[in-house]
Image 1: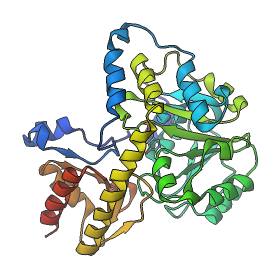
Image 2: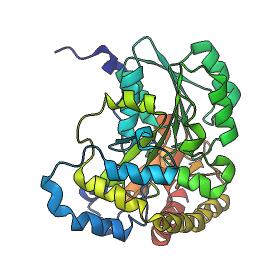
Image 3: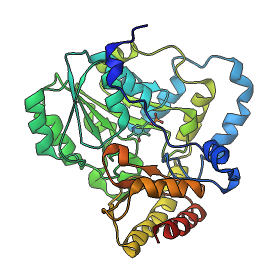
Image 4: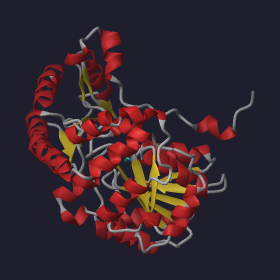
Length: 364
Ligand SMILES: *Cc1c(COP(=O)(O)O)cnc(C)c1O
């Protein structure tokens, strides 16, 4: 059978290794596995959300409210937008997929930074589009404008804060890029970690309202990171209603589950959980910065819930990640992104203690 030509260039997305794999391969007890590889919230989710999911378990037989009225209402209040400015996806990943399918053809290019979220490339390649990257992993305004002028991409992805590097782009710089391109280019502002950046430094805080008046910009957010609901698959896109209307044509019915809807709606009622999560994170990430200084390697100043350690030639990130894995500590190796670096999700105090002790051993 002949597959779509475009598939030839696609590398399957490699997710963070699951706990079950370490249990199976290395015979480590599940309770002894520390997973700091997928930027999940180490506090889990709000107990109130967990209770709401349990209390509604008997509704599993029902299709969800396909209008997603309550969740959209909660989001429209939270972000001060209208409900027709919102589309819900099974994670913001699904919204990325809708975007790709709605605008790209095989004649188009897309533009992104050198090192950024892997799914942008995969969804764009599915449509046969050509991938253009800037030279730096950071989002440098001049590099984006230069590449825009040369390639006239159909989509520009701005991942801020950026995954897997952790750096962020200021609102001022994002607006400079938006203002430099024509309305024929769609700009995706992916704010999957925005809650962390906004808490760290206002200059990096971008809200849907900052971009909604541009007809060619969409803001993406998710409940997977700060809200601790990665397993429920709830994300959203916010943009002007014409753009949202077109994206809706790509959406399958009932694209998030009945219990995912419950979780998203309940999560919006407990913003204090996000504050508590960020407080824990802010305290614990300092220990990662100290650890890097103590060990003599550098790191990227992080605006996310993870930190990226950069190694010199003497340390091999693949070896480090593999050795940690054998000890039951899962982190993310960035070798496949062309970096001799690892990305580590900031865990609970106890998880971080374990990471430091194992990593110290591995390094020495
Ligand atoms: C985690 C993440 C997403 C989407 O996560 P979902 O679980 O699909 O909502 C999107 N963009 C970036 C940069 C991410 O890190």
